[in-house]
Length: 461
Image (cartoon, rainbow, N blue to C red):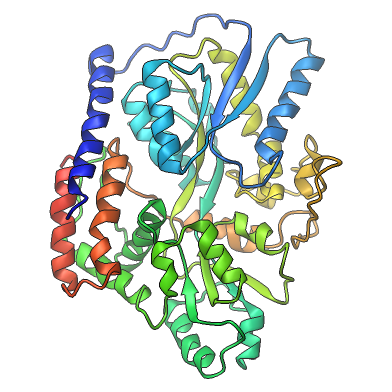
């Protein structure tokens, strides 16, 4: 309850942006004139690249710059990486674009931010053809707001289940390949096996990201969507639509997943780094994490020690989309850069480097290769980079799990609520789930009632 004022404040902070945008547009579609580009540098603002130093995003931008140089173009692109958590990056971008304090031409937005930035008039509508039929259908849905493309999918993300084959083997499990249809019930059955013959360092069955940030929202949405087919908290216009029954069922499912006999206690204060560390140290046999963990974990573990499977139930879609800012003076060239960065070849580069690609061709078409960035295949990015690629790969050079595990997971993934008030939603959602994770004695129906009341205050209905 104590965090409700923060959620209300977050919503109020967004309202001036929305009112400003409405005043400028008159409430209808705004004409989108694109004056001639001003020569100069296209500045791309993005969060941290999880593929490491001199990451694949920077390498792709460098490849575009080399192309421009060969064409004797006066344009270049420069990547600016924002610091802090995703919430802090969102605040930085909102503040910079609203005040005009930073000359960003292209912004790499979390998929949940697109409605907010579009509604506030901070990013431009883009040509529909930039999101074509090759883009995975679930991913393509994150590009639009109110029927118009406002951002182009760059790299995607989805929850996956990693598991320690070596732990299962030590506990006496004969078949350590879980396949592609593992269930939560099957995972719970492993608990008794592992508890009876615990591997060295083992504490609990699984871990995930349940600290009071976006990781908790993601895990909860996955539980809620698994409990109710077609679950959604908002409609296509961002209006709150959930009912008490589905909220109650969702709370019950989240409670089952986070029961103390199964969940590592530290998970309730863990983020991506902490949960990955606990799993790698052997404290758990299972881990819910993102695709980039596949490459990270294979720097330490062999395929005999480590496995990956689709997350049981429904997994949440993540990722980032590229948008052109309303204030950019290089709109046409910025669109050209986005077209290059999201091309089939670039998406294959992202996939080879450890991101989840947004295009089906990157997973299925062996003719689509990463030729612009050889380092994407795991070779050292420079003479001083000591990284070695131990990632299992298929015969076409993709990450070994890409076609059979990752692509189907992306195709089945569910979106988080699409609303211009996403910041207010996620603060409210995580705060209301504090009670469940802290052992609140209230029943599922009572916790659902509190959640419903708080969300109705945070979101328009």
